[in-house]
Length: 215
Image (cartoon, helix red, strand yellow):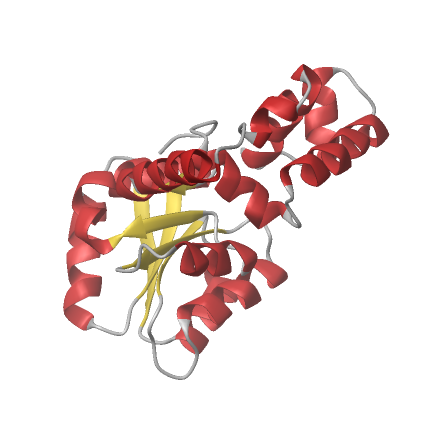
């Protein structure tokens, strides 16, 4: 059973999400929060598998609430519900610990997939976002007239990139590839330098752009 906490300051939205979730086998809504502080409190009490988190909420916005929830319990998967498709906004959500980013306009079609994917420890992005990021990346490469930096990566580095983007830790990636965590860390450092990335959030976003991980 996947246990879900819904956090949204609009009662009608919470009711709609609860109705949709009630139709999904193996999913149970354990609590509802009307503001960010309540979401943080209820996450501590119920320890849900997934939190559906609105962004604009009173007392504490959803992104800051997500950061606090993940800090207290990294196992909890945050799925941000948003109307924004701007890359900087998505990156901020990832930096604050979100594992999924779902557009409200597509929630009814993608909600089940998003919840199951994030509950399994993998990232999820609305298909619209993934397609837009990929299109933007291709356009930027053509405009600059440069070879895609992904081509600079070795086969091992590409494998590590995918595993890390899928949410694996260095230790978990090491087990999959039958390498030491130290070797994985070395590959991680090298690929980040080659791609000009600075943190895990940027790495995940790059993987989405390149369709290495998919919605």
